[in-house]
Each structure stands twice: as structure tokens, then as C-alpha cells.
Amino acid sequence: MFTLSAFADEISPDPREQVAVLKASRVRFIEFRSIHKTNVLSLTDDQIKEFKALIDGEGIALSAIGSPIGKVAVDAPFEPHLDKFKRAIELCGVLGTRGIRVFSYYPPGNDPNFDPANWPAHRAEVIRRMGAKAEIAARNSVVLFHENEHRIYGDSPDRVADILGTVNSPALRAAYDAANYTYGNFDPVEGWEKTKAYTSHFHIKDWKRGGHAAGHDYGVIAGTGDGNVAHSVRGAIAMGYKGFAVMEPHLRGGGPTGGVTGPDLFPYATDAFRAILRECGGVEG
Image (cartoon, rainbow, N blue to C red):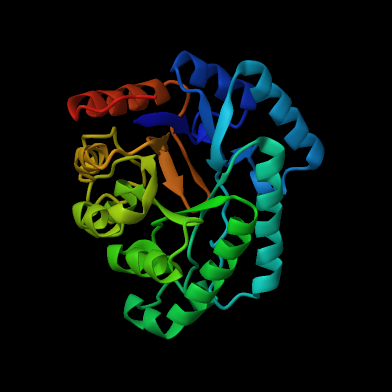
């Protein structure tokens, strides 16, 4: 069973517009990444309280906190980043969610010319950091959802499976993103097959292979790209999946800090995923 959620900042920076479009689209959950163009971990306590009052009043809840934790260089000081992570843990309690989206670190110095063949030299530090966060999450009854983002250690199917299999914690699971595998020139079907045993969360966007090289940094409607979204949905249904499908369409653009879809296109993206879900024999929760 798939329960729909959304990175609502793709709709608008304005939380009231986010909520209005979600309700019109029959989506009752938010993956909370930002409001007012400010990341959730940088919001003040008063802004958090105001947002919580808004969603409570509108019958909206969170699927997870869409944090940027892990989107720093693997050789950057760990303690300051761990403090940000602890803020995300704290906000889980304030906002009433048990999930945090995380990443597995950029190359040393965030070098744009880093050769992925050199990742083995940094594997131990990635695993150490991911394991430390998983231990903290477990103590706080929180689950971390690792997203297979471009350029991080866990951008490939093999390295995602390596992280999750080595840390081996129920507090660290995979957020499967077919478009990210496609964008990174990996096979999304292979990505699903190698990581499905760890997958407890879905991000829904699709991508045309080669679009990045052509200067097209935006997603396409689910089912119209090369992400083969239906393959993973069908596989998850067969496994008895019960969790979130988080809309993150990127239809007008996307980058390291988020994406843009707009209030006009978001309903089309949501309808397209619902059509895939029905065709695969799935049930929406």
C-alpha cells in the first residue's frame, strides 16, 4: 500500500499555497524540506511552531523531514554536521514524524572532478558516519531514509547496498529514487533489484536519460522517462510494501537543494503516479 506524500516546496515556497494544492490533489502528507525558501533545519523555533499549527489545522502530517544531512564532503568536520543531525532528531519529536531523509557524503573537498573509482579509499569513513547516525536514530526511535543522490557515495546500486548491508540497522533504510539512478547513468531496474530488500520509502520522479548532458535539468511526468517507475512499484507491491510514495517531480528544474514543479503541474504529476499505481495493481492508502 502506497501513501502519497510530497516535497511540498516544489509547489511553492509559501506553506499555505503548499497545503492548498496538496488538499486539492488529495495528498495528506508532506516531506518537510523547506518553507519560505529556508531549509527546515535553518528555521527558527517560532517558524516551526507556526508551520506545525498550520498543518495540524489542515489535517496534514509529515512523512519525514527532508533534511540535507549527509550533503557535505566526507572529509568535512563531522561534529558540526552531527549537531545539525541532532536538530533533525529533535524536530521529529516536535513535528510528529519518525523519518529523516539523509545522504552519504560528497567526495573529499566536494571535488567536482572526483573519480568514483577512488571511493574505496573513503568507504570506511562513510560507513563510520552513517553507522553513528543510525545508532542515534535507533535510540530515538527514528528511521533514516538514504536517498541515492547524484555524486554522493551512495549514488550507485552497489554502493547503496554496501552502506545499508554493512551498517545493517533497521534505523537506516533506502529511499528509492528511480530518476536519480537514471540521472547518474545507472540502471534504475538494477538499482531496485539490488536495494529492494532495504527499501522502505519511495521518491517519485522520472528522468530522460542524457537530459543532463543536453542541459535539461528537469524531470518528466512519471512513466514518460527512463526511470521505469512501474518496475519498482510492481516489485514493491509484490513484496507487500506499506509506506510512502513522495512526489518530487522536478518538472521545472532541480538541483542539490531541491526542485521546482509549480502549483499548476503538481496535480498532473500526482495523477500520473496514481495511474501507474492502478496499472500495477497497487492500493493507495
